[in-house]
Each structure stands twice: as structure tokens, then as C-alpha cells.
Length: 71
Image (cartoon, rainbow, N blue to C red; front, side):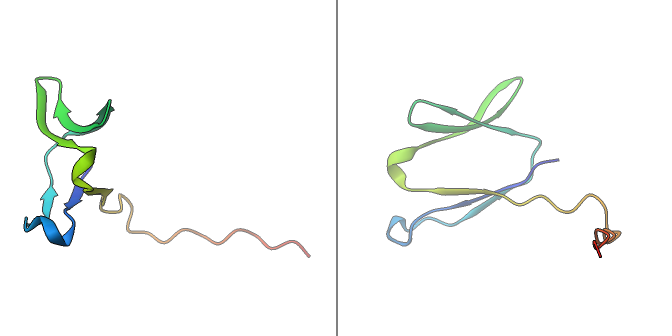
């Protein structure tokens, strides 16, 4: 399930949000839209200068094997 961290610029005086719902991020014009098949849940205009970062947890806790080295 994707998770998104929404961070507002310091001057906005808004709290950052961690969105853990099963929402998809799309873009329409100057808007970032988080929604599902039922419709949009959150729309953020680009003019706010918000940073949206995908912060999923790793699916597999097993470390990957290193690639074999050529000799």
C-alpha cells in the first residue's frame, strides 16, 4: 500500500501529513490529487509549494544478495 508524506513550506504554518490510506497520486494541470476509484480525497495546488514524497515501507525485510563481481 503506498504511503505519502505531505510537507508544507515553513511559512505555511500547517502541519505535515502522513497519508496511509490506499490512495493513488495523480496530477491534473497544476494540481496534485490523491484519490481512489470513488473520487479525490485530497487536492493540493502547485502554488502552495508542497512537497509530496512516497514513503512506503519495504515489502521484503530480507537483504538482497550483492551482484557477483567480475574478475
